[in-house]
Length: 515
Image (cartoon, rainbow, N blue to C red; front, side, top):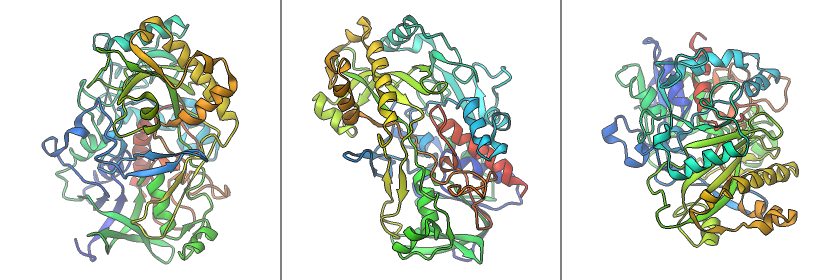
């Protein structure tokens, strides 16, 4: 590839959204599309490493950016975001749950009417190949992303006991967690076609498009910044060969590098808070205070035990049954039995306290926290990782929500048949449950991330000082530069973010296809 190469569109980042955008836009044979990914691209099953195919184990080491994040004022943690085509869909837990209609209607109410539930539902249907409920009017059949749910005969004994404990606690049965009105306990929808293989957006979107002469996929190539002609985006500066930069030109640039990568590229391009840019010696192109601001993620915490022999669940999926319930908002608390957390590479504090390499238990994910963080640049050098401050527990209200969640975990984990599978509880006991200050201390020391960051280039009208893109995904203040990934979410969804990000790719591509 030479600097003289021209494209109609450059998509930066081949993750859960970028792969979708590139595949959809390249359906027009007259549009030349370049998809650039900082990580490797594996074009077929035979070349794809086992860690990416294994749906039962998250790949948090071999295909990770290796980021760390400031979790709270006192704690720093590993923050393993994906670096590979397919992004989080290629390494994650395969949970494929939509947000609630209220979530997307909130986006619309914040100045983005094209993103209401009514407008996004057709794109959820388009992306789906729902293997059980594809005939229901709010589902799709024949789309790129397979959706299947765990059958009763596939559940581990722990998952069966968790299901029964949830029902015994009064939660209603939910056969389809993607039913817009669904709540309660039921099998997890997953992006798989069978029990074992993870289907990423690379597999679902890029592999079928591989024969198109107008689609070029380049892996192991990072983007330093967007280049401009006047106020118009005209291409990108591509970092290759560990320090060499080359310019690739295009009529339009679409950033889909994720909630950390996208704001970092915008900042290096001179788009962001003016004072911060000047402090790094970056010329200011557009003063947009919202770039990198408003970072929100989903805290998780739980009640864990070391397993008795025979209950290790090695090789089993992390979770199979989920119980959703409501705290402050519909379905904002997500309880799941964890078959196995491998502590070999991650959660070092939990490993230290447990004195073991694996635990199981019941965890809760708080879908909507009040605390906010920020992504910023430590340097204008693209080889230096951006600074990620998750801001956990910076809002006092989150302690109360997480305390409610831990008590819910304790109630479910205390089911005799679950408790009997453990050797010993890890870092929590009945005394802590009965002592508000002790429980607060446990939350401070044990809360961790579910790795669902959003909101760092949020969508909103031009008169919203914190908005970065408009509802058609165009960056305010410049032309022909768009963002299509989790960073544009104006607020968090009450679900794992993966399926919503795939939907963003579908919706953004439709908005950009005719423009």
